[in-house]
Image (cartoon, rainbow, N blue to C red; front, side):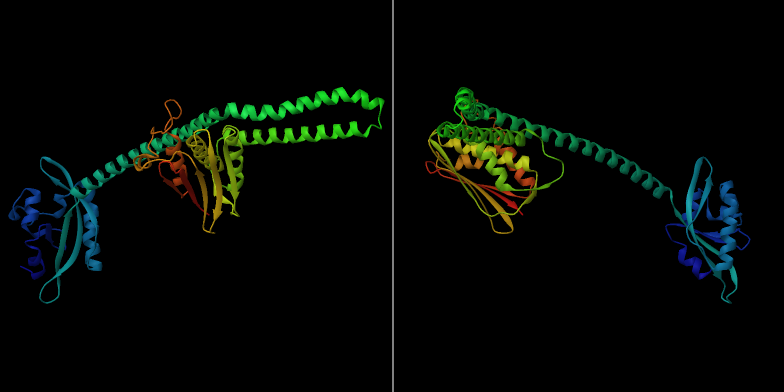
Length: 381
């Protein structure tokens, strides 16, 4: 037996020794087993009789090309076996030479591609399943994002609901003196027409107009602040002034803080930051309302901003009742609230923490019973 063929005799794959005319000179045990025959049954048979009719011409080309070029790779041929469907083998071939160097045939090594085809089909099915799962996850993510947006908006409107009475009072006060000044002007105009040189009368009119303008400006500022909180944010980040957002929020909270709670403002030089301004204002609103609530009707709240060039720190500090370690550990848990029954949903800090995290920032709390609470919102520039 030729030494090259002998090297393949015990290979686990199909190996044929074919003559240049395409007959089986010999085969290994794996080939005989694959066709359900013995090596003796296969010797002398035309290789074409083992093939599906559609592969016969391709096999002849494979042998011819091997004789010309010395070998081929990855030639796939369908084979027949009695009582079974065709099976696919992928062939690599070499020329077989005798001791004198003359060509005495072709070695054809066939790898069973059936398992590979099955694996490919399984991989394709698994890939389709993964794609379907991915689409489900994408839909679930979109639904979750929509629900999250709705939840933030609902909490925003709930917070605004808490401010309604105070804001109404804040608007009614300037409206009252605007209305009184208009009544005063209506009363004084006839007298001024009769005595156009009355300097004292004209001075009173100027004061009334100036006060009315101040009142209108206060009303307009409150309405602008309300509009900021009522509208949802855009999908994309926009550059915003944190100082401006915090100041508008303080204006709204001051309307409900009561006369014995003082809110101090200290604004440092801070750069503009890319963010969702409405969402950050919602965080400031939640923290300021909590600070005012903690003062229990009397105390001081500080709203402060500063920057080290790489981050912006917004500090809300109150002189209220403070919190113990157990309460601090639970801050941010959904539905956990320190407000009296019916006073809060327990979602304000949970939403605030999530908003700050999505902006790449941190929310830090420091508190002790009887010594107030300090909250820091740290945002990257």
